[in-house]
Image (cartoon, rainbow, N blue to C red; front, side, top):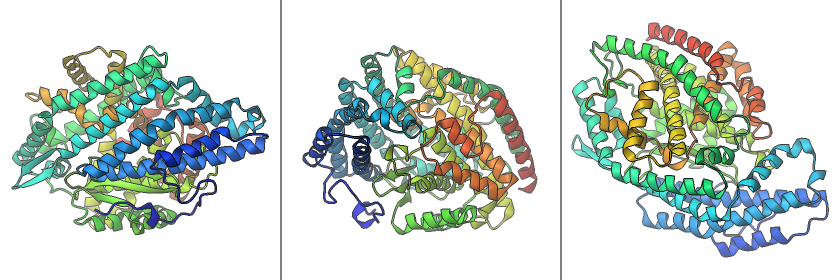
Length: 578
């Protein structure tokens, strides 16, 4: 795999403040920039605005340096030199930068010309800076660095998990393909092999998390909070909703979504002629059809998704082609590569990068379309001049990605010549969407409990996880697999690396289903509203951004029930087609 080289990428936004040759991977180059910004006299509102622009450019360039090192590390977790470069950046650049950025935020806040800036333009930024200043504690900086190192260890451990199956060593991501086989014995064998391999590392995963938990609890105490949950909500700038709203989402998932999951699973059980469903029965086609194989080679995945994006909107196709041509897609699963998928912005050049682990499954094209939605969001907001407003809150960022998956459904003939196969893919996707929502509620509720009860034991943690799955999960039978089920949360990287960053997916999925409704009603208008929302970036409040996209920021039972009814009707239609 060729390492990403920013020098080979176009720079549409040339540096105006920093030297083009500045090496932001070295503190001796970074510190003088902080010093200049800290000491620069600000004699007018115009001076302050120029200073903000320069600081934004510096932040973007420094952030890109960190992103590049993270990308390289996740692409090759088994390369000690890349790992060293990543850790070195965390310790020698990222950590010492935090108090200096805090000093810059304080300089802005204390500037006598700040009130002269237009309130309508700077309300959101001022709100964010005020929150940052209230939460900042210098003693938390080394704790955050330790957490980033532990996250890297989690990535390394997860990326190292391999099993030998069918005579060859395979990643756990690659083993996922066997869960779609029609041979039930082989599915069970593959499932158990992967589960047992992960279970062998349960103490390592639990040990990593215990260290993370301790550090997070301490960080919250340092900032004057009674618990990490309330601290995390403040740090994530959740100005428009709180813990009570999340708990309402958990309840809505239990009352309005879980029943639909149960209906879907009961129909699956009957179709398969089983007395009970087991965990290895949830991915196979219930009618006994072979697994969908949308592509053989990664090049075919890229080509097909590019054509789909172009049919949703020509601008999307053009942007995706740009990424392909620039080598900004790393999609194949391989040994030593971190699990999962993500889209990362290269903040200085304002172009996105997509990482995935494709193995030839229908899920892989969904992953690429999902990350492609994030990428289109990046492209549509890249011209916003104020750096701080270029990124929307994560609750809407995920609307961008999830909506793209749904809007792609009418164009799956790029992968499936047979309309019945395309209908199978769409039906499977919608079923996965419905199943995901209670899972999101489970992960979120689990974290609420963890951080409100930080003195719990590992055994209590596993028992509470199982109780949540009984409350919010499906009807599959976990008899004899209780230990696996109790540690199932080890698969969820967000719990380890991004605490409390998961409810965003639930909020966003409800937004994406609304985008889907608009798109089904009027494709042209639906795409226009979607692009309008993406173009807003972070220039509006979260409810206002949702409104810009033609949808509502609402995850109450009243909102969810009609959406579930529409999805259920569509599933019935798709069943007839497939």
